[in-house]
Amino acid sequence: FFNTAFVLDWNNFAIKGIFAPLISKIIYYLASSNSNGNSYLTGESINIDVSKLIYPIIDVNLPGRIEKLNLQNEKSTYNYYNTFINGSYKFFSNNNLFSFASVNINSKESNLLKIERDSLTQILNEIFDENYLLILPNSNYLETIKEAKFGTELWKPFLIIAFIIALFEMFIARSTKKDISHLN
Image (cartoon, rainbow, N blue to C red; front, side, top):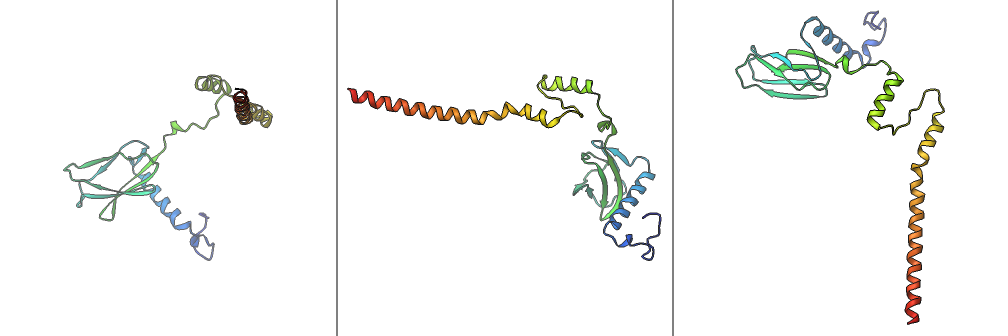
């Protein structure tokens, strides 16, 4: 869609509901990528220049919510530490955007490479103390799961049998007590 003009004679993408938010996000992304220092990782503090602000109240548009800050200090910069969600952080003073930052996920925290089987076995041995079942990709996983669940599913019938035996034992003990009391 982006290789054609946004004219209704060419396509109807401009009247779709996703058009305005998509263009807005693209503009914010392009505006933030040109300036160095506006990209942060989650958990890092955002350094905001507040020296030119007239009003001490700042509205922060976080991903999913809006937060208000009241700056009653004489400092020229403010460090914003609440960056635990990735996304676009917009800072407004008197409804005017004065700063913008992108908070991204640290790429070291999301390694998408497959783990080797030996490393996985070593990690699982440390965590579960060899009390796990590794299902291999080409194995019959349904049969393996049924075999693993077999012992754990038997507790309900055994509990019912134990309860019935306890009731039967109580009934026998009561009837023998009555028989002994009739003999005296």
